Structure formats: structure tokens, C-alpha cells
Amino acid sequence: MKHDEVLALFDRQMRRDSQTDTPATRMERDGGVLRHVGGEKDWNAVVWSDLDEDTADAAIAAQVRFFGGLGVEFEWKHYSYDRPADLPARLLAAGFTAEEPETLMVAAVADLRLSSDLPIGVRVERVTDAAGVELMARASERAFGENADWLRHRVMKQLAEDPDNTYPFVVMAGDEPVSGARMDVYPGTDFAGLWGGGTAPEWRGRGIYRALVAERARIAAGLGYRYLQVDATDQSRPILERLGFAALSTTTPYLK
Image (cartoon, rainbow, N blue to C red; front, side, top):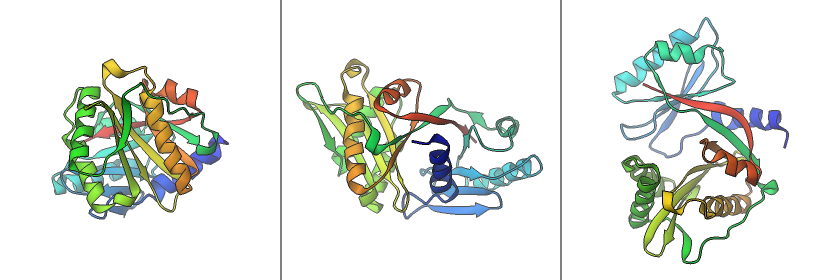
């Protein structure tokens, strides 16, 4: 995999020309900015920008006014190669708060080294209804120690509005939800996105995360997608590197 070429492809398909993930949200261009716009519970964000030292501050102020007028919080999704180089400092000066950075990791599906072995009595189930979403959310709450109502809303909305392009999963140990993850596919692109993958602390180190990656990679390959993309935490990055993923950039959410 040629990293520079794949990063350029990612930037074009998944950022500059990105599409909405449900029919109820929309993409809007505002000068040198592309934003994802939805309701109060949806993901509202600047997903791509083409700015310089002369245009950045005005563009930031315009987005603050726009989303403020809608009465919603929003994210400026910054990548380490975005211009101008001091864009993070400008966002902070405008009142944004930086979340923990993550690593943009990509793998060619055909090159992945995958194993789907799971502990005895543990199984991966695809989520297709409200009961499954609830199990998935409970697994997320155990894994991350945070309320997962946003996940309940997002997955239920995707299943209702765009079921062909979302693949949520829960991992069950008997009747106990211990992990969950999802994959979103983006028609017309070469990429499928892997999201989540949190596992309850007492179940970590048993191959569950790797099995979830393997299951989603198998589906992506069958659908004809060439690459898998992950925004990886420091915890998941070493596992993904061992599986064949490469780090292409760093991404940081700036929240307002």
C-alpha cells in the first residue's frame, strides 16, 4: 500500500467529497469548508476545509455563527495535514476544546492478517433491531464507562434510514453483552469505516477486538471495498498495526 496515494484518496473521497450517513442529514459547502449538518442529536461537524492564513479566522467564525444559530454543538474534525499549520491554535482561540487525538489508520483489505478465534461460549451477532441496539449500547457503556445514549440514537437512526450501509455488531458471552462495534460503508468510495470496538475490561486480551475486525473485513471484502479506515486510540493502535493497518495521519476533534 502506497501511503501517500491512499491518504490522498481518503482525503478526496472521505472528506472533500464525503456524503451524509443518513437521509435526514445533509452536506453543505460554505466557501472553503464542507460541513455535515443534522439535528440536535446528530453529528454536526466541519469535515473538510481548504483554508490559509488569510481566510481561516473568518471561516471559523462563520461556522460558529452557523451552528450556533441552529442551537447545536459541533465538531471541527482536524487532520494533522490540514492548512494553515496553526489551525489548531486558531480553533482554541475561538473557544473550541480539543479532545484526545486519534490516529487515522488504513489497511488494504486484501493484505490484512486476520483471525476470528473467540473464547468458548462467545459469539458475534449482527444488530438489526432495538433489542440488539440496547445490548450494543450496554456493552459500550461497560467498555468506556460513559453513557451511550448517543450510540442508541445513531444506530437506531441508521437502521431505520440507511440499513444497507451500516453493520452494527454486539459480542455476547452467554446472555452478557461484552463488546460492540460497527462498520459504515460508503457507496461510490473505496473505503469502509470501522467504529467502536470497545470491550468490557474483564474481557480484554482474549481476541474479541481482532474477531470484530475480521468479521467486518470479511463483509467489506464481499462488498468490494478496497480499504478499511479506523480512527484509532492509543489502546487499539498496536493491535491494528499487528493486523496490517498503517498510520497515515492524526485526527483531533475540536468541539464547540
